[in-house]
Image 1: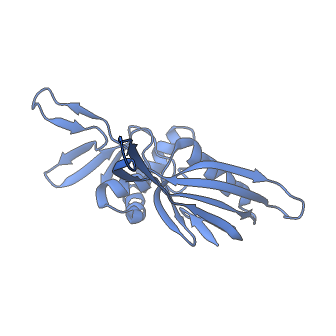
Image 2: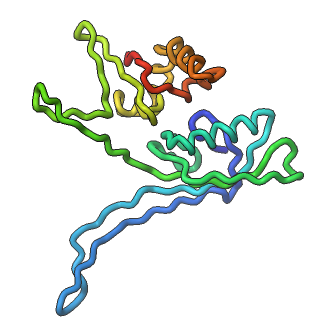
Length: 203
């Protein structure tokens, strides 16, 4: 049993494998062993195989595909726990032995997204464009949604952990749902669909 965000997965007993590796730089020398001057940890990668079953199997499949296609942050909780990850691949196979469901295999990888920056002409300061804040009354903080933002990534950005996504959704559910419907969606799917340009209150 495992979760990706709030989606429940049946993982096979041997269906989770983790790849850990490092990258080193080698420099040849005239005599003796090569010299290594840099050791860098590579992103953690987890391969998962299992089954999607139940009446909501098709919905979960579609939502996982959407998370992959948008490059949205996901949090995986299984034998391993991995936050700040994206779904690299997600394949399904329908088998008559799985009534109303499907088998799947998936690869997720840890990532760190670099935020672009720009220089404010008026102040001469370099501003991180990833943090689009509007301060009102010197207290309230708002974030203007840009493409690729998720409640998970905003929770990490503002709180240092993805555990604040529920608080963000509850504080902004009306505007999130309204924006999603204005964009042609039936709902935001619990905050998983954010529309660029929407202003969210950061409680």
